[in-house]
Length: 247
Image 1 (cartoon, helix red, strand yellow):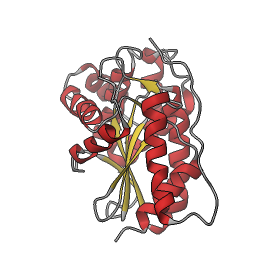
Image 2 (image 1 turned 90 degrees about the horizontal axis):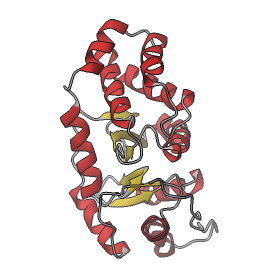
Image 3 (image 1 turned 180 degrees about the vertical axis):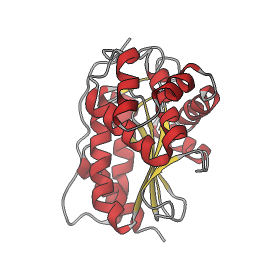
């Protein structure tokens, strides 16, 4: 069952915020996700955290970034945002655009990198796992650039919530970005990326994710900040700026 839309957490924007108050922003974002599932789709199979502290403690279980990850921007950026996304989630569609804005602002100076991982919510989005495989096939056939072109175009073109005719649209996008359609379809029919996608999903849940999009902001010193739901750009900007201050 798909979760209804819920209230967006209030984010303080006073320019005179002291750092201790700013740190509370992260707690506000967690609380919004845990108690209200703010602007996100919910996992129906994962236990719900009882308090924000439980959600936060799971962040240390975040899987290390490897060559299997999809990184947009400077791989050595001091701040990395790891997003766990469901390609049929309407909130992920919104957040994808917001993250493009983040990369446009912070990526040009190499300050922030965007790491994309899969979190298909099978119970409400039956097509999401196949679409995740399609993006991996794009990466296999065309490299990192093709992965991001494919994913950008998918979110731009499709309406979310299982309304996409994947038999038509997935190969269409492959053709648009110049991939070999025969090889793409063969890859899509294989099971070669099932484990990779399941590993991403398991990692999302282990770190405290109970809905999509679920993201974790990681500072250079390893400190982690949770980011639940399709939060607005200004909320993400505050967390990034906070993470950039970490030594």
